[in-house]
Image (tube, rainbow, N blue to C red; front, side, top):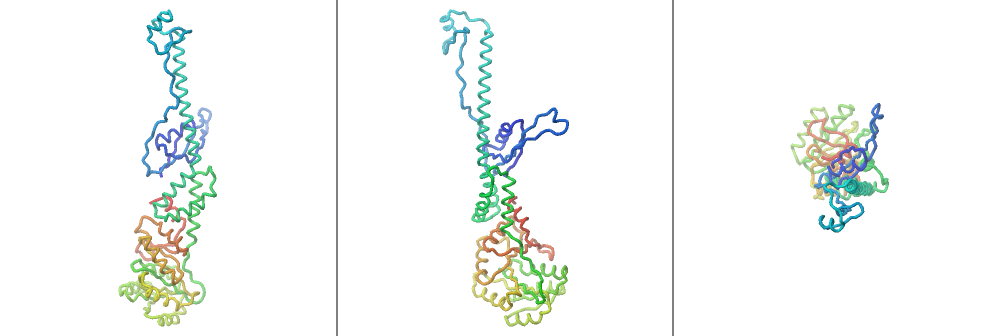
Amino acid sequence: MIIKKFTANTETEAIMLAKEELGKDAIVMNIKTISPKGIYKLFRKPVVEITAAVDENITYKYEKPKTLVQAPPQRKIIHPDIIYDDEPMDRLMKKSGVELASEPSAIEAKLNNLQSLLEKQIIEKEKDTQAISEAKAMETNKNLACIQLIYNQLISNEVDEKYANQIITEIEGNLKKDASMDNILASIYQKIILKLGQPKMIEVIGKTPKFVFFIGPTGVGKTTTIAKIASKFKVNEKAKVVFLTADTYRIAAVEQLRTYANILGIPLKVIYTEDEMRQAKEEFSDYDIVFVDTAGRSHRSKEQRDDIENLINTIPEDEREIYLVLSATTKYTDLVKITEAYSEIINYNLIFTKLDETSSIGNLFNIRMLTEAPLSYATFGQNVPDDISRVDAQTIAKQLLRGQ
């Protein structure tokens, strides 16, 4: 989207400047009169400033307004009382019996000047009329044009068409006909924030330990994410933290978590069965929070999903939280299948990783809308514990509207 301001003595002149530079598809967003300030207001007239916008994806070609009224044919004037058309000058002289003066008469010159002046005024009036008519048409369609530009921006940031249309439909009914672009943007901005909702953060409440399970596909960064969150609880909140890992399919995953545990001074226990999970619950009953790393399983395998569900169900619902960890770089179609597969067995909150590896965050909004699961954390690098933060709805809304 290209947005520019134009200043002229009149509204019509300003609109014509905008159309000459931005093309005939330019949309007038705002019109205001600027009065000189201070001592200059005694010597200068107010000027008109308009704000115009155009979709930068369109190729523009300015066409000059066509003249709607043709100038009348030129007349030959020989005598102030006799006017002849379309005949040679010598023939007109013979018919009228009047000799042609060597120089045009004063009356002839005045009439010619008057005719030129009238022609000029007609052309200028046509231009003014056309510009005013176009301005009214642009004002009428301004809301629709602004909304279309914003819609295109959402789509370019990979927001699903279904959700982009839903946002537009919900705000259209509340917009005034003369709403400015700022008001339209603000309405859509607020609507996106409301749909993203408040993030669901991990909290330590009560005397019994809280078990926090991290699930999701392999390779999305579950183990590193656990270390980032755990270090903040250990260092900032002085909480008693323990690591459990059920990811026994990858030796590297266990060793990675063991390295973090040693650095932070956190106990680590490997869990192989549901009974061992129950034993760990008793063993660490005096801890504040227990982080459980699960194996990255295929969402297409029901047997593997059942293993995770059975492990989670060893802990009562009021003592556990589940976080589905997804990569922001995963294709939207795959994210849909992953979230739907896990929705069959448990309710979860959403963590998105690898935001630093993608230029678009439309999928965060899409999956939030699809699952209605609360967003929680987002990670954007490998540094522990720094490259993680709570999901900020305002930041996401700005990025979706501002572009890449």
